[in-house]
Image 1 (cartoon, one colour):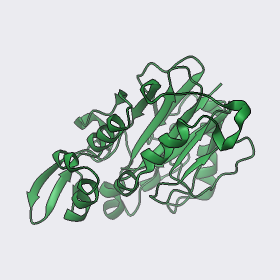
Image 2 (image 1 turned 120 degrees about the vertical axis):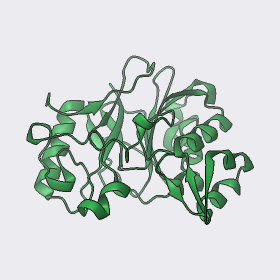
Image 3 (image 1 turned 135 degrees about the vertical axis):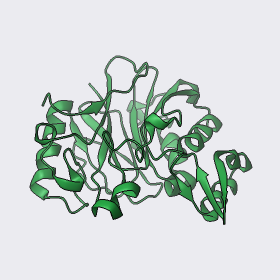
Image 4 (image 1 turned 180 degrees about the vertical axis):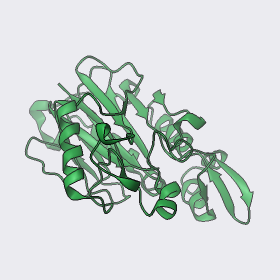
Length: 269
């Protein structure tokens, strides 16, 4: 348990709210996976040994002292509310809950993980924000539910949370130094907000370098969320440029034939 390689978010989360981001690990002491998936791969859809993935997930749950609920992520905008009986595998790219002991969990290997809570720690959420999901409104959908007076219409649990009480931690992802995209990605973002164009650096031949965390920060600010922490688009946060710490699909899929997945988790006690 003690050997798990992880990154602890540096943010002023309230008491009772806990979060972590797993790293790839460097050897058997930090995980059961090998090769392109070594050592602490948590993805069960990447051709890793299923027994190794189960061992890594069990080790994560032991570290959390909570149940990580894994989603079937589809690069969309669907959000699921977690309850004690929610199984793994819901098709969604964001999860939120007010129940203690359940860890909202998203898997990434270049996409941007975003963790949310409020200043009183009443709810928590995790968002998988690749460019498609971000452009498609996954943050807006998740925040709409996060700020709703009652999750799943449970009036007895009604809360009033304002957007300016929400804090967001942005984790590691592919950085603006490495994220080359085509004109269709630029068009997807600028169609909704012309100011998003400032997050793209033209490279010629219809290509651009995109700043995914800056696009997320821009959207969060527009939604009224200004308590932002974590990924500032600097090179230390780039999954592609730091192979000693991070899995990267774009870096390793062709070079090594695969890539593991890291997890961003947030939960209440």
